[in-house]
Image 1 (cartoon, one colour):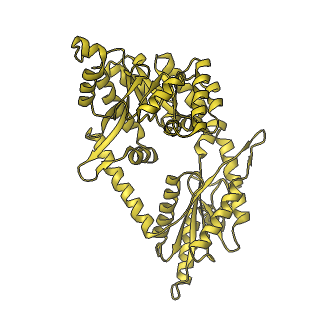
Image 2 (cartoon, helix red, strand yellow):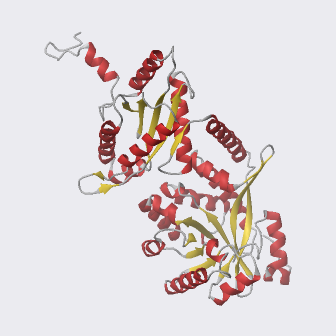
Image 3 (cartoon, rainbow, N blue to C red):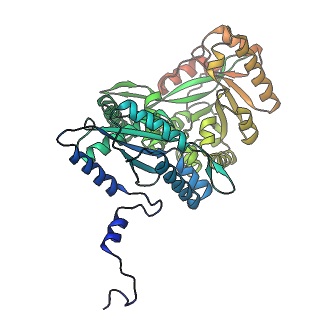
Length: 453
């Protein structure tokens, strides 16, 4: 049997080695090239360990580009990123591409933190310029993690791991961030990993709880429904704020499991309320990027037996715009099943009026930042008045969040706001305390002795 045809071109050993060390898409070196360069530098400086720096860069929000414009457009952007990196790194630097949208570079003449940060900001600016896709331009930001030899590791694997730890911290802080590895950052990431494991275990053991805060009619304080809020009290960690563990679940990719557990618990509790009361539940930005979200939610409601018409889902403008087309389809599917959609934190986004035009919301929630200043800040009062008038014209219901005293409640009522929630009307409490709250405050139940069920 012949392995090669007689006229097949022969590939030299040099060419085979070059292929093994190259990224076929961009022509940059790959992970093996990065490894060899770092080992060579470390060996050269073994007797007098002068520092050098490695960096890892990741394109923020790259996946939606592939989803929206196709893989070819994504590949074109990666090639443009590679070209820009080669053009802007200092002499003597090596640029490589790893999996997906992650790039790395070795900076032999960058010796300390400030130099790494300076290079990072320069590269960040270069990569933030528009990318030409022929019929359109796309803007993207980038996140960076840097590690300095030998302080962040003396071996290739340790040094790269340190740079990736720094990159991960940058991604946690938001898009376009730059982090240089330190022991403090390593400890912070270690704590986050410990928290992640504890939270995963809490989800499996059903230890994450749901509390409920009443939403009332402002004219007479009648309860209309409850917002479900996540609560977690760990035996070892104590109370962990949802402002900490919910974003962590999003970042580590298990927000769906957390959300489905909470929705199931909340829906089961809502079954025992009077049927005219609604359940309000928050969706994350990650869920609004997942095309299966609507079916997952409706499936949970079907299994529990809760009428979708009793459910309101709260979403933020930021979450909607992360993947607008997918979010629109999810919202439409849910509304067709009877679920109502509420735009949360209204007034804090950059283009909220455009969202009201483009998406078919049922309700708007005025952010607590305006409500808390309604008694002392005239502009906040006028903003609320304008929001209420606009929503009235658009046939949208309005809820004011964060009402903490009688004065705020009266002002909102006088401005025409129909619904509200906040500590003045009730703090978030567990299912049993919500039962007692309804018995004491819900007119139909207290008057008739009506029980749950």
